[in-house]
Image (tube, rainbow, N blue to C red; front, side):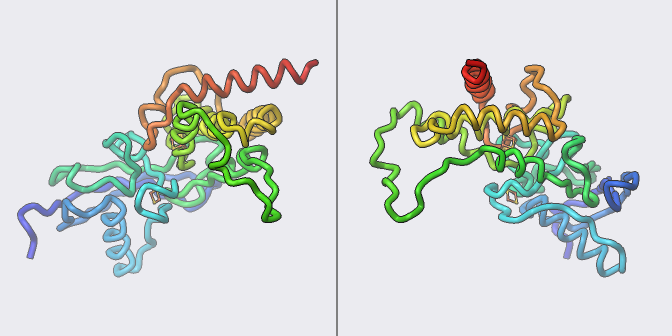
Length: 256
Ligand code: SF4
Ligand code: FES
């Protein structure tokens, strides 16, 4: 039986076979959606419906469905991760929408994130940025020092922890009018540069990660701050300032 509170919705979803072919919006209807279901569960219901009709299901990325992995990545009614602040798409609930609403659903759009299919984009550019320097080299022979044995000022530990909250979802890139990846890269650089374990490789890391970011085709930062507003983990623009300091100091010392 249809509950009085259930939602009937029109969906306009971006469908695209692959990165070579042009995509387009296609219209769908879903009925009897519980306001307590998540946005991704609503898409699961749509896909069940499409499969029963022998139609191609909508491809979308997801994994943990609890705001941790960074896989979910939808542009919903013109906003990365939808209308709520500080949540990922998987944490968005249908109670945020009204019966009869039309919802536009698109993939992240950036030259560095080509569409693989429908709503799924290739974010391996982020992996390559991390591989270029987003790590610390440690002895894993079994003689490692307990991280807690190193005294770290509380303020530095807090800032590093806040930067480490970045889940690599790419909403910052999708939101930025220049498709800049500065918020993501700066979070990864800051998280390590602020801690003693990360200081050893800090110069090489800043130079390598910024170089890789540029090679991947991300745009420049023009300080509009949209990335910070749409970031589901509240990553601060202060990290970009930290990254610029790290990069400048590494560049000057490189010239010595
Ligand atoms: S900085 Fe925020 S928006 Fe960008 S990848 Fe990290 S968590 Fe996602
Ligand atoms: S599915 Fe993991 S953060 Fe959304």
